[in-house]
Length: 227
Ligand code: DC
Image (cartoon, rainbow, N blue to C red; front, side):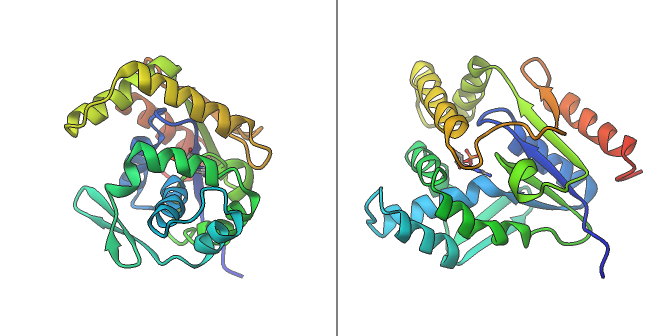
């Protein structure tokens, strides 16, 4: 039997910085990256494009199991392709994010994505970013991080991100949307957003990217996952 592939899981709410940290850890180690949120966003986008009823669970679950998805790292940008089409920006809108959070509450959709996600665990290792990476998808991972930040700080980060991209948004509307999404992601019956019992919780409210990255790298060293 092949030795198990090392997996580091990074879970947490939107705006906690886990996307940025996961990418940085993967790059530092030369490991693969799973952006599981992108998979839920792809299901949501494919559903919107096909004009599916927002409540049609079975049709969304079928899409989750059959859609053709590719992630391609080019320079510093991770390109996302759906059925061969570039949808890197299209999956990042608030509309798709809200819809992703709804479809992610359905067990049939989560089940359809489970093996797809596990297939990302190939040598030399995987950094898995999401909400249930440590609790459901990779429960055996030797290092699990749960990254949080205050809701105000998370709304502020999202606001700055959007401003950089040139899209307008109001801070109060973003705060409201983040609170709604948090409530839905944390209260759903299947794979809610909670830290795994053996996760290390890092609050990044007052930490910059470098400081969080340093903590994660040190934790992996202590566990002899890397030198
Ligand atoms: O991390 P994100 O904002 O791209 O995720 C989009 C939505 O997908 C989020 O509202 C919750 C859901 N999600 C999930 O339920 N489980 C995951 N592992 C990743 C994302």
